[in-house]
Length: 145
Image 1 (tube, rainbow, N blue to C red):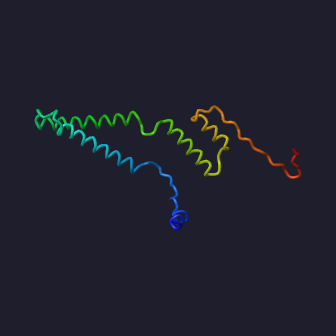
Image 2 (image 1 turned 120 degrees about the horizontal axis):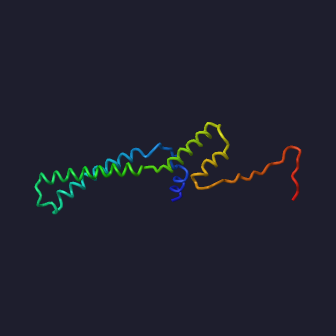
């Protein structure tokens, strides 16, 4: 029991998180799975239910193709109307990237300007300046309480 605790605490560490540009392998996988689900559900609706028993095979195939195409067009319309990242989030991400780039380049405007840039999207009109306690310069002494 003690050895297991020691091993978990000292030998095993959490992996260091790395930044990813996007969620790409999973986005593609979910898009493919969604397309397969559309085709499968359309086929099950047309060929496996008793609703279309009176229809000929040719009519069922045409209905299957029509339903599948309608579902694909509907998915494309929904994707065009509602983007995966809302414009407000995209704007905040661009601002954050700009601030991070300036700080990593060790140049640019002061931190106060960065706070003011982020104040707008956060719904804050103005951010007060932080309190800074100045230490006495050489030769000055602190006043006693």
